[in-house]
Length: 120
Image 1 (cartoon, rainbow, N blue to C red):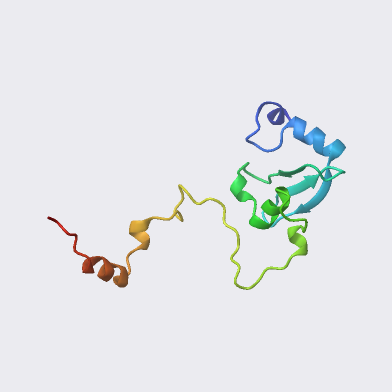
Image 2: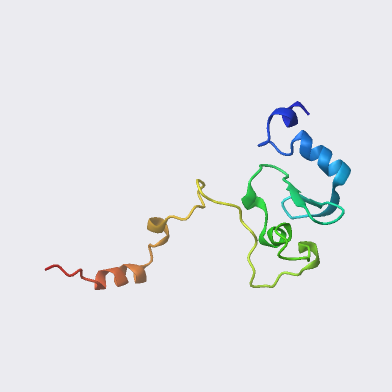
């Protein structure tokens, strides 16, 4: 409770807890444990993060609902077999994209060797 008073990066603040208690209506929960709420008139929507407060932890379906671009909540939609599971931002981790490490196949090396830069 003391952590809620002084820090916002550890989760919800005391103000968010009170606002959610008095004005919030539970909308749903995603696979990562984030909880989604809206007010009674559905003019405001917000998320309470399960772990770290990071916007990339919200999957695209719930992000559409949060930004009022979709009225359908993600629990009501079905995923297609070609859709991948949502990943949060991978920058700074071992899974981050690195062009040198990811571009090691022989066909890309062959393509790069075919080009000779023109010099006057």
